[in-house]
Image 1 (cartoon, rainbow, N blue to C red):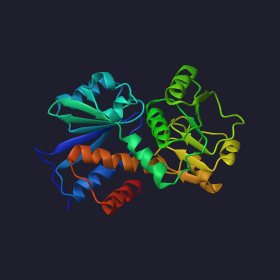
Image 2: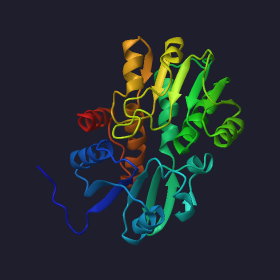
Image 3: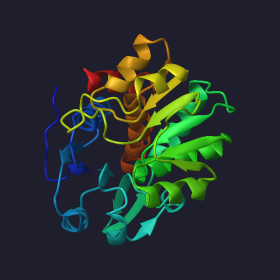
Image 4: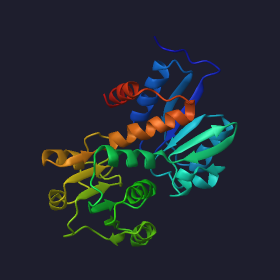
Length: 272
């Protein structure tokens, strides 16, 4: 039975360059299952300052933040939680009576996935990308104990800065490096993007690796993930990241933590 939206319904939302349906379906499924008077809607914007001010002015309870706004939104917030301060990247805004506090639940999700997939800590990795999501992933990898890795970025200044901050090495490309895990934190392979059909790494690089990790959640089977599966690699998908980080957002917005069974049901519904 559908819940009725009324004057007391609390709105949560997302801001993304290319909005998808995962978050909307995931959160709304849980609101309905737990009989919570919330509703969730995805948005995009060309004016991040006005959008964040709108969150404050309209009393929007929570706002998920995706590429390319994870860093751009920071000047318009009131406080950063340590999870966001450590990497200067935001993926969650919580509005408490007009006070905007920001978090980064991507970091938590990545850390949990490295554990649940039992990724060996001596694995050498190559991570492509140097934006806000890249910071969250690199920080989680570093804090999990990975000693050797490469930040692959065409923008040398950004790539070097990220690599040096976390104790890794910058490279313009992987070339003939021997790596055990490839990680994509760029929009390459994202549905609707200019490189939707592209691999984030050359096929010979993937062939040499044993683990493929793509944070792109739309589609679930990106070209990189599909290639990895077809060639017998261990894969970690953006859909997994999306579900785990969305749970932490849900808890911040509502104060309720769903059961594992309900989380799985919501994730399955969101991906269907």
